[in-house]
Each structure stands twice: as C-alpha cells, then as structure tokens.
Length: 81
Image (cartoon, rainbow, N blue to C red; front, side):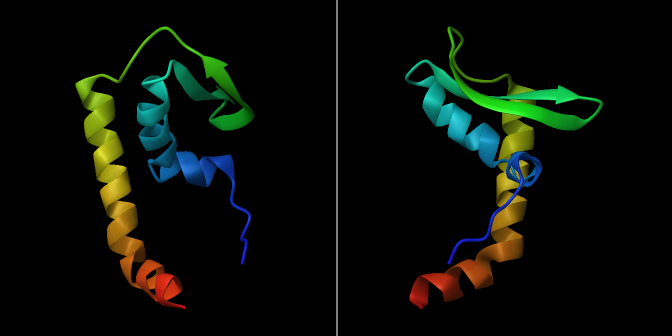
C-alpha cells in the first residue's frame, strides 16, 4: 500500500531532519526551499557542513518522538500484516 504524503508533512514530522542527519555523513542533504511558509521546491544537494545545532537537534528529536508516540499502534499493526 502506498499513501502519498506531502513534503510539509514529512518535514513537520521531523523525518527530513532525521534523514539529513544521516545524509550529512556523506556530504549530502535534502533541501527544501520555503517561501511564505510554503515549500516551493525540494532537491538533493552536496553540502560542506555536517550536523545541526543543539536547538535543531532537540526540536528534531521531539518531533520524531511525538510521531512515534502518535503512530506506534498503527505502525506495529502494519508490520504484522
């Protein structure tokens, strides 16, 4: 089953941050261009920086933890099907 989701939902869930933490290891990132609080473009890019500041990391961990808490039951059920 595939359910298309928006880049906004992906970003709001903390997953863009989490994936970019991994991609930073290899000098890559998924970049979202934002204008007026709206994502207008998304693309992969080579980057020179690595990692995020403490505030971004704290916010990212909270978002991913909230997503897991809110979706744990459904994720477990889907994995057992």
